[in-house]
Figure (spheres, rainbow over the protein chains, first blue to last red):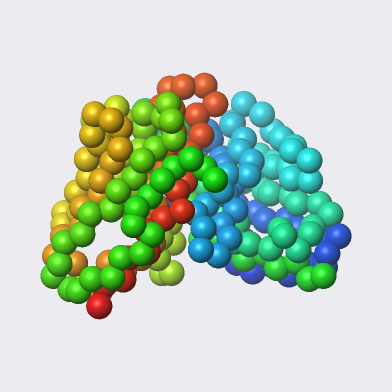
Length: 115
Length: 115
């Protein structure tokens, strides 16, 4: 089955700096890659996603890049703010190709933005 | 607020007991996914239902079962509970596999504590 590796497990940045989280996946059939943000006591919140037919997607301060050849994808957060502090999860899915969007998650990255 | 409703928020029970977790998907969503989140295993896919039928199965124990009712709400039943079943259980919903721009939205979870 699919295996998703996520690095780093913890990340501390100064407010205003950029943060980058990287993930690799094992199954070349995966074609959908969402990122979730989880705050304490809450469920994972979808913040951005990318499908395998594009290499990059941006939404304000958040961007995701995908390299299908190398089977890795990354989350980039620019101009970080204290409210960006949370645990971030990457995930991979074979999507409609498998008839199910079941997600395989990475282990998570705890991001701390220091004011 | 994702629009996915899970009840109860907290559940404390004893080993050997049986509990039922409930999930109401977002309006219009036909697919429901169940996930377990624990410190050692991370977020693990358990099972998916689509329009009342089981669609995909993950790492779900035989002691666990689920169903989706005609009104599309879903229940996850956990029986013969063990200490190791203590975890956060999340439900996610989506429009349904095969739909363009399919995305999963998570509820706020049920925290299960088995004593």
